[in-house]
Length: 127
Image 1 (tube, rainbow, N blue to C red):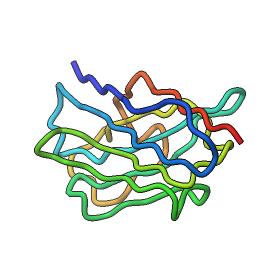
Image 2 (image 1 turned 90 degrees about the horizontal axis):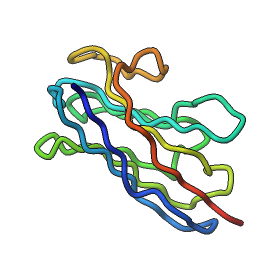
Image 3 (image 1 turned 180 degrees about the vertical axis):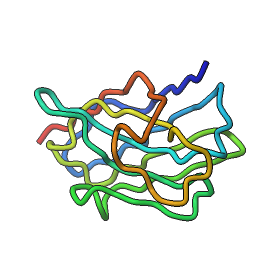
């Protein structure tokens, strides 16, 4: 079975940085695009960032563009999310997800595009 395990969440103050990591197993990691989503209390899960299977292209939600960076290391089967200049509105549970398809040429951004999900890691940002 596919297993995605997020780590790196925690407490931070506005302006601080955190780095999230997702370790994948049970799938051909290098063939799948990967993404990060987040869900705040009382809100729907929203797209944060995605990266193609090759790592050559990335996409970001407007709310995090310029502050967050997604990257992957196919040799280690990991995908990371570097979060800088954190804001209280970044507070959410962050989820790692793997694309349903192999070698997708476009960047997926909808939850339905992703077939496997991690359990999430909490990020809390205080003002």
